[in-house]
Image (cartoon, rainbow, N blue to C red; front, side):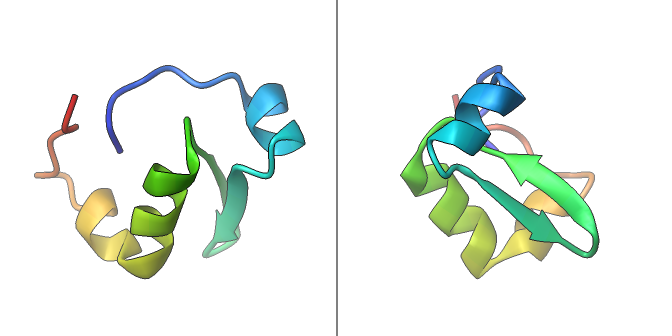
Length: 52
């Protein structure tokens, strides 16, 4: 999403992981998680460029 590296275990412990189409995604913060949740196709598009 934003380009930050995320430790999956830490993200899961903080509630910053979700499953989309059978695949787990982890996030640096709640804002990135919510943006992805609301429009995953925009972020999974190969043309998407991280914002940071």
